[in-house]
Image (cartoon, rainbow, N blue to C red; front, side):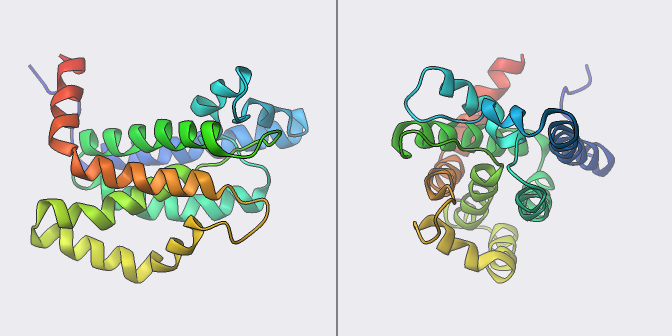
Length: 196
């Protein structure tokens, strides 16, 4: 029986490319046809309807600049995650996707609306930085070093330094990335049980 998740380069590129294409397709549709009304599906903290935003917010963006700013690190950091395996990528995407959204829903300011993939981006960032500590191997250490050199200044995004930026999504994304790296073996076993 062939494995459900393969790890060849072409499949990895298709998965990462499909997520980016989905974000851009939704933004084109939203901007051109819906005048940003799709963003209403974002996270509204502590409201019942805002819970659905945990699922949709990472796919939605407020502006073209917002989408562009998230696309490049999503591709670069996402690639560093996916080269180690699609299963690992699925886990390192899903956990920050949900936990960063839940953190925003619980702790962000009332009467705010949160959209964007930055919680997932910061999840990748936290995952890649901390994985070398938990795994203690040369490949993880090399990737962590490259990530620090390329995206080290992202760490400032964990602080409430700019108005209108969902620093809570960044913070909870980063923390969930670290937790994912810490509990990756257990999460992988759980993931495999679901797929089998």
